Image 1 (cartoon, rainbow, N blue to C red):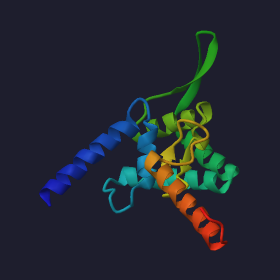
Image 2: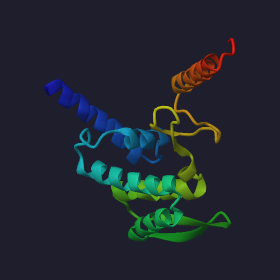
Image 3: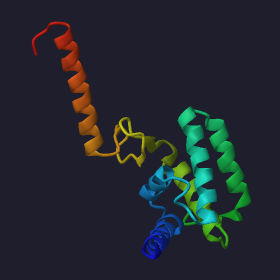
Image 4: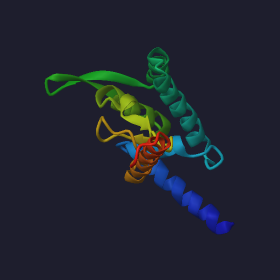
Length: 166
């Protein structure tokens, strides 16, 4: 019991670094989208998990206005401004806590790097993953291989049932 609690604490520390660091790790976002609510002990991560799932739920259902409203609400809560530097205007965040820093980085990634459409569910297992290429539909090679072999089996079975020799 004590070892499991220590492992969970270590796991949460690594998760905090990946999510609340200077740059958000997209694989950490996919990971927290896939974990169960019972695993999370921290209230901050639980609240964050609820909001992120809500955002991607809107995206998944095609409700872009609701997703934009959620990001707009988070954006308005952040202390931010604009500065002119190196010949361009840049958004600037003032002193932020971890939670606010996450939303600042996440909203910027959604707007600039198009993260809203780079997270998807695996067509075989249903887990969330971050797409490194826009045409990926499986989270891993094993899911892709398993799904293809199942499709091939059903195709061959259908042909056998129809009397065609395979």
